[in-house]
Image (tube, rainbow, N blue to C red; front, side):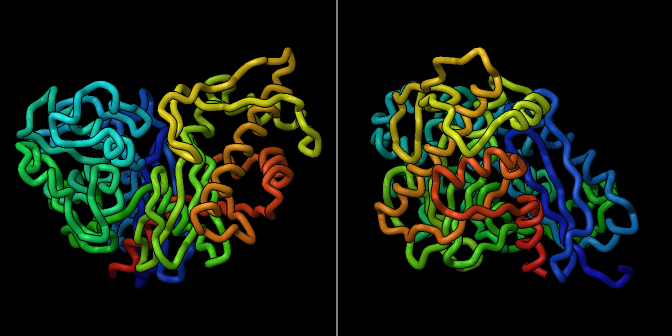
Length: 408
C-alpha cells in the first residue's frame, strides 16, 4: 500500500455519517460509520461525526489520501455567517415551508416552490436571519468546513434550490433579489474545490496536499457505488425510498429529478415514505426480530399507505396526502409485514410513474441502503414488483469516493 493513492468519501445521511476509502482498483480499503446523537437538524453534529471518523482512520492509510469528496441529503439546509459558522439549526429535507409564506411577493409561483423544495426552506431562513448570510446544503457546508472556503455549492445538491443544469444558471427572477448573494457559486460534481485548509489538515491528521472535490447528493452517490448497467434500475431503501435509472435524455416533469452524474443523466424520484416510518413503530433490533416471523410469500391482508406524515412528492405530488397506518393488528410481525407491503406498493407505483413518462422499465433492480439488508422485505418487493432484485453492500460513501478518485 505504501505507493498507493487513496480517495476518501464522506456520506452525510439522515441518521448519521459514513466514510469509505478506496484505491485505484476501486477496492474498499476502509469504511466506518457513526450515528448522530440528536439528529439531522444539528449541523455541529455533522462536524463532530466527521471529526471522529476521520481521526479514527489508521495513520498508515490516512497518509496516502490524495482526494476527498462529500455527499449529503438533498435539500437539508443550514444558514451560516460569512465565516461559515451556523446561526441556526439546519432545516431537514423533509420539512415543508411551501404553505408558510406568500412567496408570490418574491415573484415565485407555488408550483415552483413545490419543484424547488429547498426554496421554501431557504426563504424561511432568510426571513428569520436576513439576507447577509450563506445558505448551504449539507454536503456543501462540510466541503466549506474542510477547505475554509464557503463560496461554493455543488451542482446536484442545489437543483432543489432552483439551479438549472441546462442553462447553468439560477432562475431569472432570482437575479434582482436582495438574497441572491446568500446562494453559493455553483461548481460541477468532480471538479476540485480547493486544497484542505492547513489548520484543518493538522487538526484531523490529514495530508496537507489533500484536494477536496465537489461531490453529489446521497442518493446519486449510492447509485454510483452500485455501478448499474443501462438496463438496471436502482432502489435506495433508506429513510426514504429513492428510485433512479440512467437515461439518454432527461425527463422534465413535476416530482421527477434529473441529475447529470459522470456525464450521464440519472432520472428518478423520491418518496417521503421509507425506513423512517418503520422506526416510528419499531427499533432496528425489533425490525430484525419481527422480520424473521414474516412469510413473505403471502399477503398480510392489510392495505396501508406508510407515509411518516402528511404529504407526498413521488410517485404523486400531493402535499395533502394523508398516511394510512391503521388498522394496526395485535401481531407486531403482521403489522411490519403490512408496512413492508405498503412500501413495496409505493415503489411499484414509482416505477410505473417513471415508465409512464418514458423511462424504460428496469430488467433488474439493484437495491441499496439499510433496507437492502432485510431479506423478507426484498422477497415481498419481488412478489409485488414482479421484477428481479439484487442487493449491493457498497455504501454511498464509496460512490462519492469514486468521484474523488476520478479527480486525481
